[in-house]
Image (cartoon, rainbow, N blue to C red):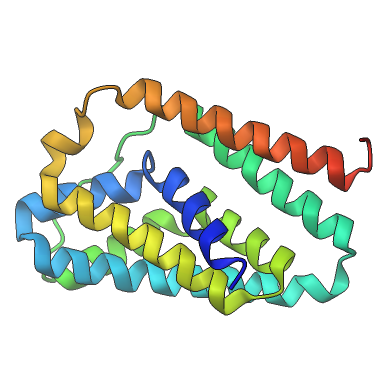
Amino acid sequence: MEILVPAFVAVLLAQLFDPPARLAAVLADRFGKAGVTAGLILAHAAGFLAATAGGALIAPGMSPNARTLLLALALVFAGAGGLARTKLADRLTNWRIGSVATAFLGIFILAFGDRSQFLALALAAWSGSPVLAAIGSTVAGGAVGAIAATVGERAWCRWPGRRAAGLGVSALLVVAGAVLAVRALRLS
């Protein structure tokens, strides 16, 4: 149970400023909340299960320090990735496959290999509990996406202090990663 909360918190922080949440808001404005929320939860579950399965596969071949360093790198990259402004390349306006399928495929494709999934992979490898890492990550990604879908694109993209909060979260992730890296490399 130790990894459930860290996975939830790390992915929650990373997902707050990632494109999948914005895409959920865009799609909810077009299709409605229920179908989009179902599709995004399924997309996050599939993506995080794949990521944590990858973490479980690589963990046995890594030393404890290497697993800690992998987690440190994932945190640093998640923080650094949050510094870049991202916008949606495609709003999926030409997709005519329904709300659940559009949300599932669109969010799965957009999120595949993103910083949240790298965090989930690293957390699964570090903790040795891929199922709990997948659950915590999926709940966090689903919660952020559901909130974005509920409030809609306009409110999601324009909440007060969004840029400052993004910078603060990015800095927090980078610092946490740097501290773990120092420990993994035994520099302290």
